[in-house]
Image 1 (spheres, one colour):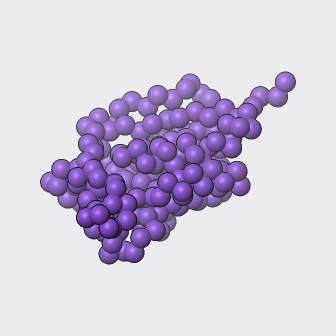
Image 2 (cartoon, helix red, strand yellow):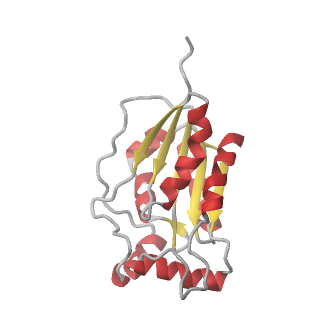
Length: 201
């Protein structure tokens, strides 16, 4: 009997939205009988949600300068080999989020990603291209093969999105602001539709 294909999802989600996106994305893999392992990235000092204003703005220089934070030990399942690695990450201040950046600097990341086909999965407000260009360079250094990227974004205009995302990040309120502004973040329809991208992969 053939060994089923194995997929590893390396993920960090502060709000839980990206976790839901990832779960939607891998549904076709699970339906096809593939084994899906989850490897959460967990900062030793959690980035609580909603943010406090001081910590939100304090994360700016660390994000831009790519300064890592301390992480909890990774719960890697032995020396399992994977046919595909999915890197699900957020974009903070137009850069890879601090927790995922910290993961990429670990020796374990090089071991996990070396020579592997990788799909990157992004959930963000917008302006993810600079972070993805950085990610592409990191993957080249690991000898990985980037085979796809899926970016789900907040579809509102830039100005409206800036207002609503601050309400979500600092107050924890994703629903409509002031009774008329759209809900912040990736829409429920787009999260559900993400499984179709997984089917394509």
